[in-house]
Image (cartoon, rainbow, N blue to C red):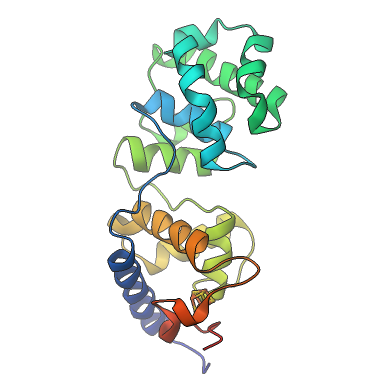
Amino acid sequence: MPRESKKARRERANEIYDLLLEAYPDAHCELDFVDPFQLAVATILSAQTTDVRVNEVTPALFEAYPDAEALANAAQEDVEKIIHSTGFFRSKAKNIIGFARGLMAEHDGEVPADVRFLTDLPGVGRKTANVILGNAFDINEGVVVDTHIKRLSNRMRFTRHDSPVKVEGDLMELFPNERWTLLAHLLIWHGRRVCDARKPECPACVVSHLCPSSSV
Ligand code: SF4
């Protein structure tokens, strides 16, 4: 592919966004939650596992610990038993209890809608903060970068970087702010359904004519 100007890349990227939105009009966060607290805890638990696996354990977890106060006072081993199947259960139990204690100590038990306060809390990095802000508060603070988004962004030449911070920076330059949260869902949905890590289904891909990595 000849060298692409920034303007051309921005146009191509947003055309891809439009086509993915047509293909996945229902794209959304696949973690189950009813409030910011539940989304934050579910997102912390989703590290290194699938949303499906997290959704299997959170009903019991939130029944036992419906809010920050309850989780802040939980015994670590009780929490570990409930979340065991999500993997890394010791550190995740420690993180979600620490997160709940941080909410109680600093924010009256409420999840703050501010990236600086969020990333100061135990267990919350920039990616988790972006998920919480975008999906529980409708605030487009940044672009979530997970393994699917990193892979697709490189295949589609939205970036040539591997570091999540740099990938996020490149995506934020290409797409207008109001697209950031849904962009992440669209790329994740496409990555799960078509642009597989090992075997991308380029012939069935709605953006193959705009993708430099297409095999078609
Ligand atoms: S054309 Fe192939 S590599 Fe490009 S986004 Fe589609 S499935 Fe992925």
